[in-house]
Amino acid sequence: PGAHDVHDVWENRIGNLTVTGYNSAYSNSSFARKKEMDGGFAMSPYRLNADVKTAVHWNEDAMRTRSHRLADLALGYWTFAETDFRPPEVVRPTEPMGTDTSFRNRPVTAYEYGDASETVTDWANLMPKLLSVLLQQHRAQLLDFAETESLLSTHPDEHAGSRGLRVL
Image 1 (cartoon, rainbow, N blue to C red):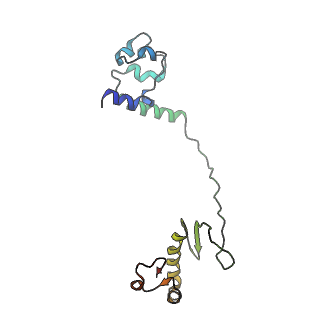
Image 2 (image 1 turned 90 degrees about the horizontal axis):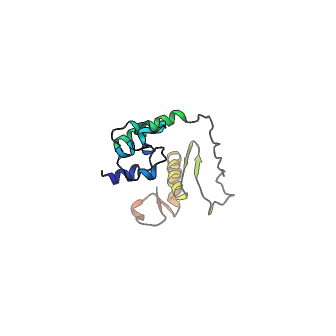
Image 3 (image 1 turned 60 degrees about the horizontal axis):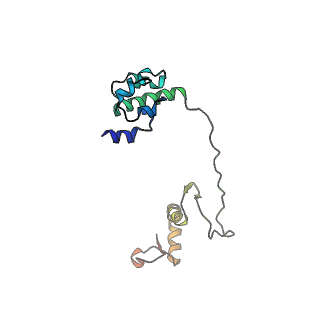
């Protein structure tokens, strides 16, 4: 990559970070000039500038190497806090399905039926999952019910393309 591309990528990264009071004097000078000029990097008293002070070339590889070294150094200074904190679990309200409660226009996030439980995104997502559980546990009764219910069928060929029809 060209110097302009390297500058665009590395301008504000830790690998190119230096402490100096001479930024305006450095301008677009070469690295050799910035290093050797009066007050340049070769004379810097700051540990942060040690890599720059001793470098022969200042390029993308040097900045990448310095980035890794400074990141490792920072992790040694500022370790991650250790904690046993766990946010409290969100207890979602539950409502048993029965004949007394209307669920019209109410969202659903999960269901439990016997030993089966699963999160769902909406009612349309719940229905095939719950029907699958019901089929496993009550296949004969569900198929008998489908024979008499107009929105359920056990004969896919008879109702191909019907909207709202579930084939069991």
